[in-house]
Image 1 (cartoon, one colour):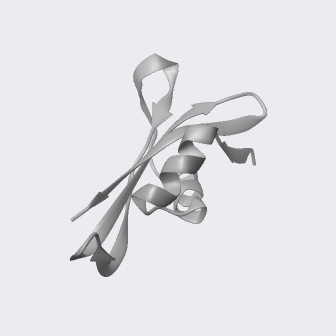
Image 2 (cartoon, rainbow, N blue to C red):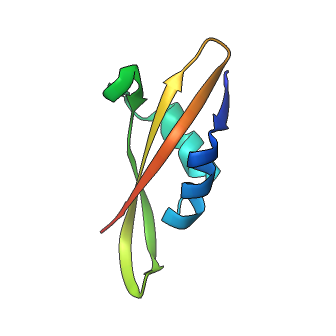
Image 3 (tube, rainbow, N blue to C red):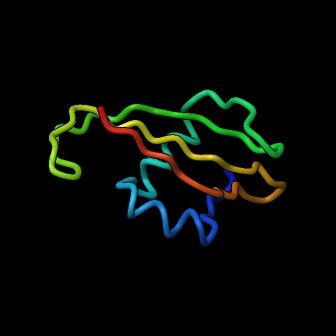
Length: 84
């Protein structure tokens, strides 16, 4: 199994957008992958949330990493998070 490494940008964004490394890794390892811009890949997974984010309670959190599947590792370039 390849290791998952966050780029500097992804490391900055993961906390500010409310995702965890565990959620990102779970999403990459279990969700279907589709092509993204620049020859990268993306996938998404919904997680049960039921907590407050930015002053509003949301039931679901969707984690959507954009990554490159390299020879020896998976490099996450950014992570998008949606609440609904």
